[in-house]
Length: 325
Image 1 (cartoon, rainbow, N blue to C red):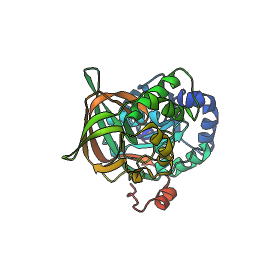
Image 2: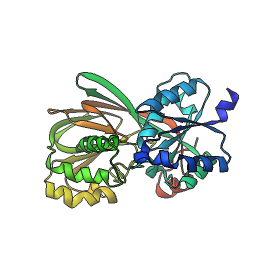
Image 3: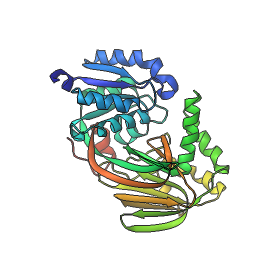
Image 4: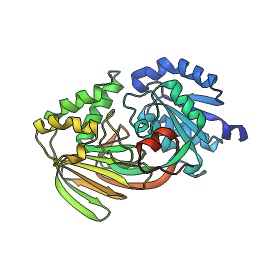
């Protein structure tokens, strides 16, 4: 127990990055050895397996975890942390060596995608407490829930993620896969009459896309929630109303340069509790994982996950610096 509490458990998703983790794990493990990590590595064998591995090993005494993979791998590690009740979630450290196709969670925290740089950052163990979100959704008539730590996308975002993830499961993929489906889905997707309640305030409109952000990025670098602070206890909502296909194409750049909220068809809100109802069910993705359809409810869990971050880049990039643990 004593050794396990100080030892890192490395959760390796060999399929992440369209198989890149499987190809690069030898290099990554050599770097972990080089930098003196005391660790044990476990490989996932399919979707949701990391959730089980993390929960079981917390009960066995582990308190420090590294996700080797993409945003979905980190999402499963976090869900494993929340799925057990023996230890407060804030007593468990979670870090990441990003090898995914999107790598959006790490962008907000300034975590490098270079393996050695990410490992050097993990070695410093500078941690902060960030918020988590809990979303409730449906698959047919069955209700499900999922924790997330970066961003949830509803409507058009959910459709694009569904198509992207289907290609990944078939072994097809490249860094532009999300953008390919973003453009390709424009002609098939129809905006939905949606009612959104945020902390008692209600808005109704024909919405094309809805982003519920803890972090700032999604879709492989789109800055859809540019002002999000990941531990302020609030969701940052980006609501994109119905607009023409030409307007969408003309303003895609705004999603990447962080000016999306300045567009007149976009409304932003802050809130702790959100519900979303649509006349026609819309799809959901959270941290890039395709989950289900509306209706949805979202609840924020403030400063509930202890994560290893880049101290220098966070303090330089943000006016408000979250407290260190």
